[in-house]
Length: 406
Image 1: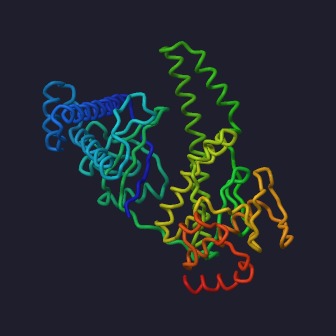
Image 2: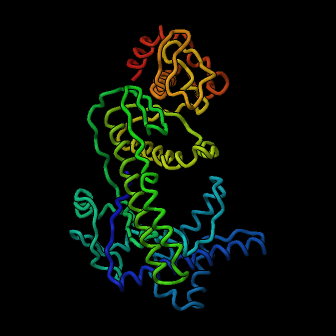
Image 3: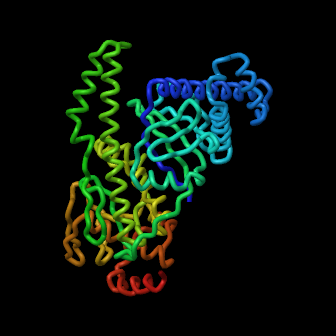
């Protein structure tokens, strides 16, 4: 399976200047070719093929001599990115390609496999202008890169807002085999007070990384706003703020990866809700807290890692009333509000923790989907029928059927 190993590069001044020129030239070529495709379609009402774009690049090199200073294969990759962006727009209904700006948070260029000279120890050679570069990554990744250089497919050079330069190397790498999980299936409820609540009782706290450091962020933003526009001191303050934001984002990313690794190592099947994060963000009272959780990022990490480790992720419908249903008898409490953290079922008189009860209901619904007793389409039509009152009597039979199924 193709995976990316991201390494941090430490360049000298000449190499930094060359990479900046490379970013600028690649961006210039991309924008020029995009403008050419748009104008040709407006004037002649016909699309421009990839071969015609290649001829247009040759004309640009004669018009702008400084383009020849950049590596030709990197510029060709820029044209391939533009061509792929057009295909995504017409085939996959994604957004129309946009013009790139030097003020974007991230600048990047892509190198094909034949543009990477080799790796020796913690030194890497990319092209003639970028040779003998010191890099840092984990020891396992460094060892794998040195021993499997023939499996490298491509590499993407990027610079973030704080000026740090990374190289993401796409390489063919086998998946690790995890040990036998403790649990066959688990349901997880995503919340704000606690980030994740598992049906078996495990809770992962919400670190509130940005909120706990908002005083420092406010101070750095004030210092930036006081500096004169265009001055060197303003640029220094901008970089200082960007580095601190990058540090906080790295902490959040590490926490998300550690949670997903633990969930996948302990459970074979994970059941979660298909949340509408964009719709949840419309609630201005909770928007900041929801944005800080990075729910979509957590879902993406969990999804692709489940493919790596031969695990399964089941999503139930977002309209399934997991919090309002009693996990014991199936009674639906329509009067439950967000402020109610605990409630007592009036039918079976069982006291429920709101989040733990929701995780249990998500687990039960995941079991029913797994053995074919329910479907996501049915949850929209009649969510009450998905958790009938006979659930308490049939819970043992459902679990036995599920164990037989897996």
